[in-house]
Structures are given as structure tokens and as C-alpha cells.
Image (cartoon, rainbow, N blue to C red):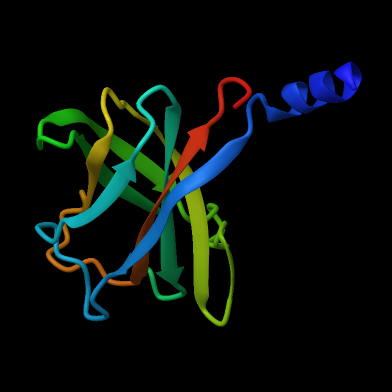
Length: 154
């Protein structure tokens, strides 16, 4: 019995559990630099480590190989906790899309850091693109996934 408990405890360490996974559509006509997408993430456990991932669904007509995003993280009282630039490589130099997909729509996920949690509440993630285009075409949806990393046995 003790061996079974130790095996379970060993396997439980480092497990990841999604606490949030949501996409927001980008207008078909294009994504304005001023069109910030907002994601509200409910966090109940302030003792855990939370990892943040950004998901991009691009169409085959996206005109670039990369995508630069500004990622903001806000506390429940709307204070800015962190602001980072995320550089995504959506295609290789030959133009082949790196994401999984079919029918002209491709999805890829990129690690975007941690979500610093000091107390339970609703944390907010903001995402906007940093391209100089007035209207960035070819992006279908932007998503955020947050996973809770178990740091021990619970």
C-alpha cells in the first residue's frame, strides 16, 4: 500500500490541469492594433503556479511568417502585474505553417510565461498585436490557456 501511495505521489508532482481555455474571434476583415482582446481568468488557489499559453488560429492567407503580440497580465484589482512581448513564428522560411490544421486554418500554441497570483480572484489577460498594419488580416482567433501546475500531492 505504501508503495502505491509513493508511486501516486511521484506521478502527481508536476501534473498540469487546465483552469481556463478560451478563444475570441478576430473580425474577418482584420485585426486593428487598438483592438485589444481581454480574457478573464478565475483563480481560486493562490498557492499554485499558473502557466500561461497563447493560441493562434491563422488562415492560409495570413501575409507574414511571424506575429508579435503584447501580453498584459492584471490582478483582480486591475493593477498591471506584467507586460511582455511574445514573438510567434507561425511559418518556416519556406512558408509552411507550423501549426496543426486543415482546410486552410492552422492553430499553434506558445508558452507565454506565468501568471503571478497573490490572492484568489479574477485575473485578466490582454492581448493586442504589435504590427504597424492598420488592419492585420489572416488571423481567425486568439486564445488563452492557463494551467495550474501541481507542486505537490493534493
